[in-house]
Every structure is written in C-alpha cells, then in structure tokens.
Length: 311
Image (cartoon, rainbow, N blue to C red; front, side, top):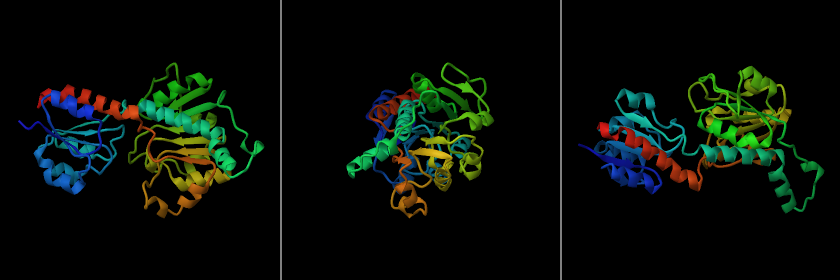
C-alpha cells in the first residue's frame, strides 16, 4: 500500500516526524517546483503544501494515487477542494495553527494606526517633531466590527477583551454564536455602529472584491480598516478612495489583491498606496510567526492521525 507523502513546501519538521511515526514515508522537498511536482506526484498518497503553487485540476489529475492534500495554513483558496473531493481525496488545513498569530498582528496594526506610530516614527527620523499632527485615538470605548467569526475572528475578539471595547460580529454562515467576547449582529448593525472593521473570512467566489466603494459607502462612521484574511477580498483602489474621502481613517493591510514583486509594483494604485501615511502594509505575514510555524504542523499531524488508518 502506498504510504508516501510529498512535502512540497517549507514545513516545520514536526509534521514529518509525526507522519513517520504513523508509518508514512516523507519526501521533504521544500524547493520543488510545480513542474517537478507534476512529474512525480503520481508516486504519492499525500501532498502537503503552503502557498507555493495552485493545486488545480492538472495537479490533482497527475496525482492519481492521492488520498489527501494538506494545506499548511488556514485558507484553502490555492487548492481546488471541490474537484479533489470529487476524486475521493481528503482535504485538510490548519486554521487553528495560526489564529493567535493573525489576531495579534491585527491588533498590532490597529494600535499602530490609531496612534500614528508609523507616521510619527518616519517623521522623527526626518527631523520632524510634530506632537499635534500625531495625536492618537484611544481604543477604549470603540465598537469593533468583525466580519467572519471563525478561528481568527474568535481569537481577535478574545484578545480585544482587555481593551474595554464593544465587539460585534457578523457571519453569514453561522448563527447563535454570541459569547463572552463578541455579540452576534446583522450586517446592518456592523455598518451602523463600527468604528473598526476587521475581516476574517475566506476567499470564495462570493467574497472576491467584496469590499468596494459601494460596500464602504454604507458605513455611517469613519472607520479603521483591517484585512488579514485574503487580498482579493478587497478592492485596493476603493480603500484609497475612501481614505481620501475621510471614510477610512487608516488601513492595515497584511494582504493585497496582487502580492509579491515585481507584479505588485506594476499595479496602477501601488505608488499611491505605498506613499499613503494612513496605510500600514505587511507582506502576508500575519499568520507566520515562529510559534505558528510549529503549531500548524502540530494541527496537520493531529488531523492526519484521524484518517490515516483508513488507507
């Protein structure tokens, strides 16, 4: 019986150690290309990947002996889950592995925006001492609106609990989820009350370009905006438009609809985005800490144990 796993991305060695205890043979190839993977994937029952390439129909068809695909992270948008499952392939991910990392990163971005830390730091380094121009906002008493109350949304709410804020959350696919950290509300209530809007939703056909000029038009108060989910959910030009209109007071973007250079620099909105003092950017690292690197492998290994005996 085939018990070989191809690890096609950078993964903490704990996953390999635990998989081998279960009787699997792991080929750890963090530098392997998509083309090289296509040539050898038929020899494996499992494929483990992070973000290196799309596990699309071609890869799945080439993997004629695949029993599972494991995504080392929260989202599954680079795996054609529907097609994989139609072939009887189990798809697993690790949303619990980086939920705390994402939540902490979102809070760091929010506090930096509200206190003008990026702008003030840059000005002092240029010899500018401007106290009034960098007067900040306190988080206490604000209403935080969370879109998506899954693993990262819940973690974000828990970590906000010490800031004396009101946390409200909307999730289109869940009901009855109010808890000690957030109150379930309608989207209309988010739009009416939020001082901060934070996205914690997956990229799907439904959520792609969800945040647009029209979407932001309905918010009743100026907001601080955070996106640590997926870049394609947000229309970047709409963020810039609404900063200019004063509807967005600051934006923390860990993800963008186009990522990595040189492609990012070629976008018509990139220079304006990069020069905007009301925007804080990070290179899709919210969920990528030293701790989450290990924890993601722990979660995947635990899931592998559950179904490994079935084949």
